[in-house]
Length: 145
Image (tube, rainbow, N blue to C red):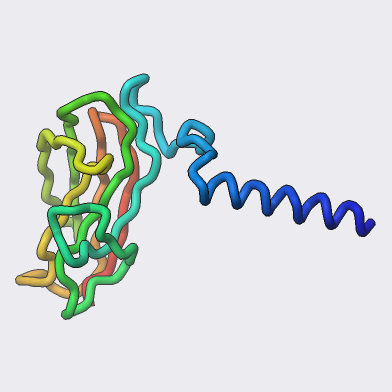
């Protein structure tokens, strides 16, 4: 039994070393959605853009927007050779819906939308469904305090 525990611990340690040192490739990770052979969504999350709103790497995941929040939105880690990608979003709150479609260029490997959501936005629960190249990716839900 002790041998089993040691082998299991070793396997976990080796996997941790490989991923920390970047030896596990991005292809080893199961993507969130394969939109097309040349467009893969690896992850999608929402939260606050901190420090530099033009840089999606400066991001703090969250489902709540407070009065002190800066820019709030979503980001998706993408693997692609495309220079321009169609992004569609429909946001809603209590039956009110807003929609837009824009072409985005990935920046630092991310597609993202950041907005100053606190100014003029009523407190409550909101949701937003995001599509990439007409393929549904994720519905985000958040609360404005």
